[in-house]
Image (cartoon, rainbow, N blue to C red; front, top):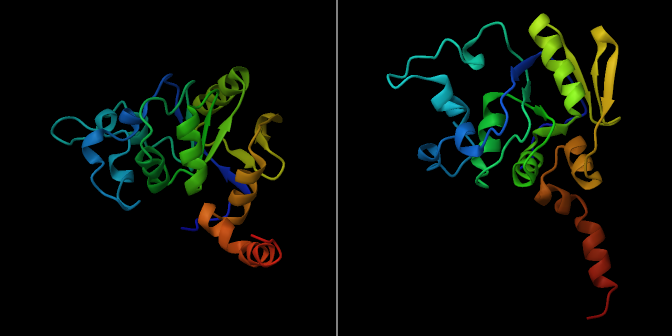
Length: 198
């Protein structure tokens, strides 16, 4: 399933400076019955967003009108716990295209990359600068430049480089999942097969 190409994202941010956010907090297990990637966004952080009577919790950031955008900025060790793909699906379905943290659980990171959400790991120091900047000015914009592998805070003239697997980077730039990638090189595979003895 192809997704939107990711090259340069310029957006405001939603700050969630909580460490060790696990996949059960991102999308509780009771919402995992669906097999399609649709509809999970409404239950993103469900137990943190809503009271038992389904009324919004006023103190949770996703219910705060001040904070909007396609970038979620989380605390250290984001996406730990079970390997459920639905956590990445919920983040994508809600509208986030990038999650920034100082550390990601490996399986969660890969699940995000497989569906078009860019997980960007930055230093703790730069993450703290982002949180400070966003709380001082909720309308401040970040630029996530995948081609150059940089996160910039233009208003403060700050930036930091991030690492990404080259294969996953190429897929994100082209909007490919693994199947799309294989289909794109189908002719090369067929040519190789034709010229390679069994």
